Length: 373
Image (cartoon, rainbow, N blue to C red; front, side, top):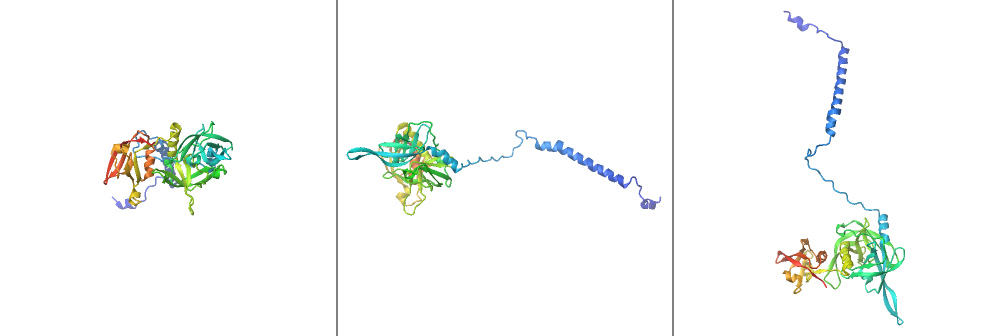
């Protein structure tokens, strides 16, 4: 056998170059059609079909609810100003042997219900023989004093009108330092319907009541509060009352420190005045002071009991002089104002748990609250 001819011989040709090219192109076209059909009829429907219940066990991340957007300032002003009123205090004086009714002071107020209830400061109407309310359209109406509370500096008035515009109470516990606010009122008694703007500078500022052991927390703002603004509303940018303007710090070189009574306190006092004509204020029956006043160290927190009144709720429960109150129903108490704020959430005859420090140990006492006369 001649192997040499096999190895060196020319291969046989079974087709032309153009034939192979045509077959290659045909194969490419068929492959493309196959891939297209596969994706459109099998893969894509599988990817886009909804998953059956329970098929996805992967953890889900909850999307947080968006914070309420602030309303434009102009819109807030348009909402609240129809309910902002002037409050004038009139008293009788003797002139030339005759009693004459004269204006003794003025301030602001805000309508809080469509049937004519108005909140203002107690010091605005203090000692009034007649109270007159100046409505936004400049009409004047005599108001009834429903009730007043000296300790919180709040008073509730009533005018005989219906279908009045009013401003709702907001939640002062949700107030955040730095958020924008508006203060409204009648500064100096004749600049009616005035609005100033600012921010919340601080919350839970302790303010002591003169000649008393009582203190309450106030909201601090840099919105301008002038004489005559007392009793007007401090509102958030949703048009809700978060405080009642009550005072400003007036010292040489001091600017932008205004104080407002939180709406949480306003609501409790308003409800009590409307229902009982007075605030049904609970009491423990103790004389107290801030612990740091006793030690001289501002870092010392708590309320020191100086004296327990004999036969009082505190006495019956086992509290003693020298105890330091640090919590009411597990709510922390760091200073006087927080103690009285916490107590104002309860009514006489309700039971609370008072946590104290005694001899460096915590103890808890159940106390049935009395009523302050």
